[in-house]
Length: 167
Ligand SMILES: CC(C)(COP(=O)(O)OP(=O)(O)OC[C@H]1O[C@@H](n2cnc3c(N)ncnc32)[C@H](O)[C@@H]1OP(=O)(O)O)[C@@H](O)C(=O)NCCC(=O)NCCS
Image: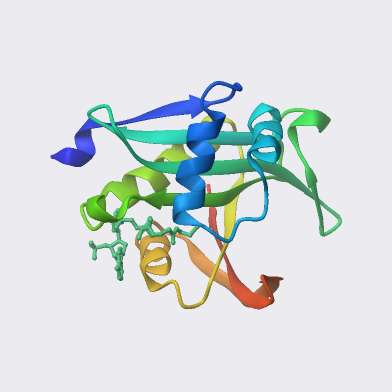
């Protein structure tokens, strides 16, 4: 029932950046960027931030980034034109407040990412996840993502998995 009342609000202007920063920091205290750097990303046309709101209050967020794969190198996408067969959407981050978890809301947030990617004509969504983050990995598996590499890149000196979903 609750999942039906979930709405998404895009944050794409200065207003709202500080609140978004506090929210992201509460989920991921180890992030290294400042609120000023977050502001730059919010205003960058390759980044997409959404607040997930349940009957008003914010209960989670979603951060996506447009990228392009050219000769196995990842580049920014939108400034080089509209999405095409090389266009990838990176799911940089998502989270749901602890007291609202295990109610299907994480799946709704992830579905928002998939709908957005389809609308904008991206061909693939990909993400990196810590191998021990079973909750996130189960969420991705349940929503048709597959693990394509168990040791894709290092984040904070730890190897992380790469998962993706073709659209
Ligand atoms: C990952 C996260 C977004 C899941 O949100 P959620 O609202 O609990 O997700 P849902 O209720 O939609 O659950 C969907 C599926 O995810 C899996 N899942 C969710 N929580 C789980 C847990 N604690 N342990 C194992 N699997 C879990 C289950 O497969 C679940 O399906 P089921 O309920 O049919 O078993 C949430 O745990 C979270 O915010 N974690 C911290 C931030 C994070 O790790 N983000 C992802 C990496 S950036």
